[in-house]
Length: 237
Ligand SMILES: *Cc1c(COP(=O)(O)O)cnc(C)c1O
Image (cartoon, rainbow, N blue to C red; front, top):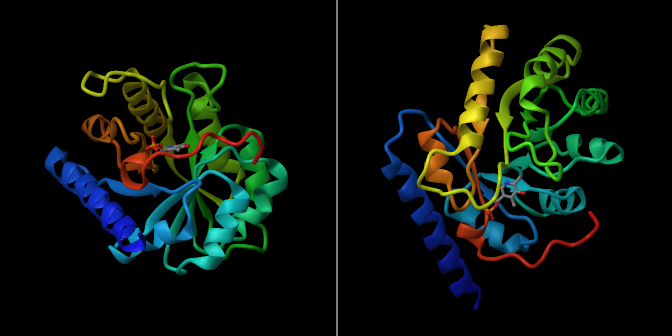
């Protein structure tokens, strides 16, 4: 059972790696294995095949896995962050980035939470609501520059390093994706306003990571294609 599970995950992982390589895009793109709801063993199978970047959505789950699993894993927090859990997240020594800074307030909370807990500034991405959907978190595209400026100028414990979007579900994975274009345009605007900055683009998931790479993604977040279907979303974090 366990060996079959391992074989499946390693197989899926290598298929994703091959597809990323075959995309032939000029930029380097990091694969983040999104492992929410999946048992620690599943992550370990991927880890033992060389995977180091993992993405988690829930604080409790991330904290537990980070204590159980190897310390050279690079964790990406990609869920909605509640203020009262900020310290628990930034206290994870091998937390690589928080991808979901979706307001000035959230940035301030994280900046404060880092005090005394991290030797170096914490990498953050600003989440952008590129599809303008009420149900999605994220900064409106028109406000991205000002939020990025705020982080640069007023959050010394944060290291602004990218922009992230989820985008609208169900878009054609073979056509130009307006969410990806929008995020790339936001990056351009931020880099014009803050010339010292080079931002990453975190976009693309199981259905459309190759398409996202063609639009400039440097960080794809792939879950189901590696680990298989997930149980339905629980109602509480
Ligand atoms: C769950 C999740 C993913 C991965 O989605 P898949 O469709 O399983 O690849 C990527 N990004 C975020 C923010 C997620 O919550």
